[in-house]
Length: 252
Image (tube, rainbow, N blue to C red):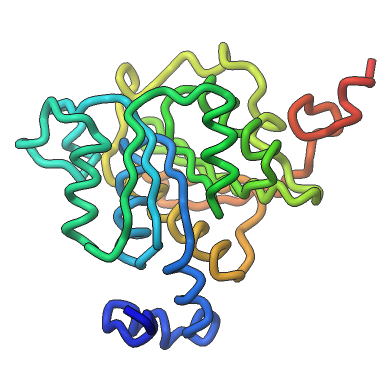
């Protein structure tokens, strides 16, 4: 469509004074890389596709399991055993045929990850591996690509936006630099399904804000579903972080 703002799909976004036709135009031209097509990546990708993001690149090499269906609502029982990127591509294409969905069903090495991040306007990391998260963080720092990362466990969720613009905002490794600290996961500890949806929707919201030039929510956002509470922790870059502080290597 020559004028995406005339598409009825975008009517409510065009009506938003902060977004309007200019914001919609940015969204339909945008490219977003989503790492992990699971509990967080599914709702994030769904809302980005519904919003009309031009290209969604999904990176996941797992297959749909029956135990996924309680929280990964992009998939249905018939998808069990399929590669997640293939099932997600089919579902997202039905949701919005105008969105180009690219699936990458292999683990990306450092070079390929950096190349994929460099091509993206925003990277969303919903992976379940801290090692992967640290690698994605490093790739986004190296390419100056904004990173939105989130996590869920039990009935708790968290989210962090890393602009990677040279400011005083922390990167992911400023907060978490030791994978051994994260031995628990939802397989053993469980997760309340809708919490993944809440955090995934938050990630999509932050991505759309960045794409449309509306800024982003700073700090670390924590959600306690049982207590019904969102909290924001103000954070600053760690001057000793080896990932985002160039001078850190010279510190004793």
